Amino acid sequence: MYGRVRRIELIKRIAIVVVSLIGIVLVAKTIVDLLAPGAKVAEFSLLKRYLNDKGFACEKLTNSGAVCKYNTDNVTESFIRYDKGFAYLYNNSNYVVEIYHVDGEDRIDFSTGDDSFSNYKNLKYNCSYKGNILTAVNECVLIDDKDVKLDNEAYIGIINKKIYEVNMMIEASGYNKYSLLNKYVWEKK
Image 1 (tube, one colour):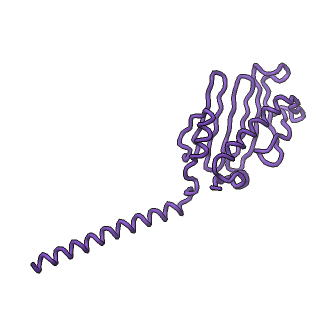
Image 2 (cartoon, one colour):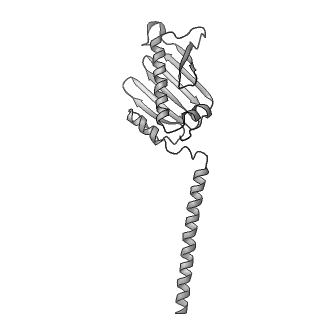
Image 3 (cartoon, one colour):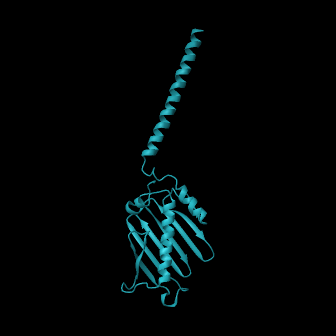
């Protein structure tokens, strides 16, 4: 009987040690996950839901370079989430709008196609903006000739509409827009 009591006590001690070790490992894993770089970039579920509601099909947005795409017969629209920013591309037979904000590089490019207005066919413009890249277009100049400015109000309105749409995506994401715009970091609100 004395040996049996000692064995039961030994089993209890072993069980307590095993449960304690499991608890310590779980607590340590939680702490490492919270302190790891990129831990703030967790889900992007709000952004994904917003884009899905707009008809986009999205990859897993926690991966840098993940894409959400919207395709119809003559329109391709893409939002790409990078760890240090985002890119947006709208493409149809008339024009292409690209908004690029990644790791210190900001640009808005506008290109026209074969089906564009007669004096604007197959031209490429680089656009400056007011305030930040998600505010509004200041002016667009022809890449080949900096003296030629885009003066078509319809095209400028299209670019501003796309800027507004990207702004709404970022606002709906659940992340701080100003941290993303100023520091190129996705920080939770």
